[in-house]
Length: 357
Image (cartoon, rainbow, N blue to C red):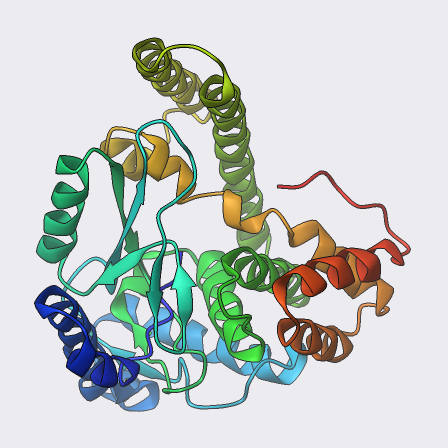
């Protein structure tokens, strides 16, 4: 999940919020300003760096960034044309929370960005402190490291060094995704926003790979899709089990016991997946925190409308500019009207809709 950080929006809130609210906004403002203040044009970094690995990655970033605007029609601005060396693994950490016997995430509401299902922190220690507070109150909590996020075009987002550890196909995916957030944004509708961005990243990646004629990139993509699909099936199966459990008439004590058993089974199934992947721990980082309701809420759920956007693109003859125009119009509608209009528009597509993801 990507923090839609609108740093200056917190300034007004400082006057009306409590102390903890003021502290939260201040860490967001100072973190955003630090990220921007240390950013350098990638061309200058390329001239100065002596690290061949960093040089190759940043050269690839520039090529992908140019492709994003030239061929995919994504915003042609300074975003991801500058680089910030973070000196840490992630640009920020998002905290998710749910009740102990529910998969419905807690929400937090902010100026401009609206309501989202997470709180973002630029310091990992702050995220851990918030998660501990939520757990002490009886919630499940999960901390997810974020390699990049979008400020929706309000700032020229730099390329954080956290990007560079990813494969070229994943870097392309991230750039296309984050730029898609600048195209259209529906306030208080995480599923709409994330599903649209994922649909754009997947279509963009498909088109970009077709221009590369590089077997190594094709292999990267195939491997990534294999791991992603396996993990998604595991998530969906566990989620379905827990949804049925929490809706049942069992006692809370029995539900808690069955919940623990479901997550034990999930860990066992992941171990089996890793054996199929020749031991590759694609999602070890996710399982490093004991899986719970909040970690399930942090993944998968937000992309359930991807097939609708894919169908809408097909209905527009594969024309991304026309897709963007339709999505911008949809984003301006009230949520119920938007959901109905998106479903109706996708239904006119020449392709069959897939099951929700």
